Amino acid sequence: MIAIIDYGMGNLRSVQKAFEFLGFEAQITDDPAAIAAADHVVLPGVGAFCDAMAKLRETGLDRAVIETAQSGKPLLGICLGMQMMFEHSQENGFYDGLGLLPGIITKFEDRGLKIPHMGWNTLTTRDCPLFDKGDDPCVYFVHSYCMADVSDDFTAATCDYGQTFTAAVCRGNVMATQFHPEKSGEAGLKMLRRFAEWKGATVC
Image (cartoon, rainbow, N blue to C red; front, side, top):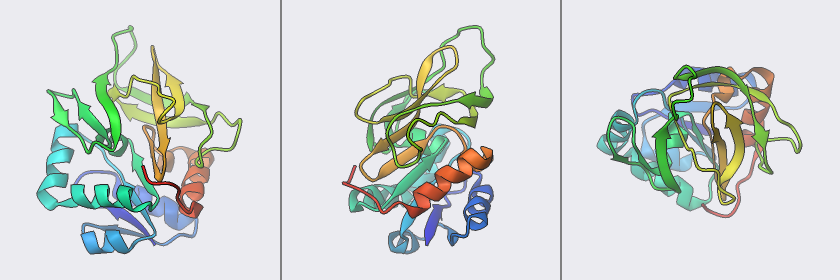
């Protein structure tokens, strides 16, 4: 079973429907016990970083995410869910994240492009269970802040929008996408299938 964490923010139903379309059981839940019992866990997110982290901490679900990462169970962050996996964010201030990955989420640099970065863009992928080797899919983004650092330690895909940024991460059993795979057509569904069938790896 795939647990989709419900902390009061995020496009939960569309993620659930995507997994169900692929034939996987997916449960939206705010119950730490259900999250602990799941085979795979998804941390989605839409909205402001500070509000999302506050909701996670109020409900104790921050511990559920961290314990999932520590367990070796496959964990997938989506959009804001990816950003919260990092140490900090500068969105509307300076806030602590979950600290599963090193780095600070920052606003896109002013390069004369419309912010937020919204719509379809092409990835440059690296070796990661989410992607077919050599495949550089076009996926759907909606975000104003990003992980501007590109690291050999965690970057699984990059994208360009006035600057190169980390569009997906993969380290141990933890994976995440800045884009929305559930809104990215066949390419996104393929990624969700690969995640759901993935057995996990060394802990993050």
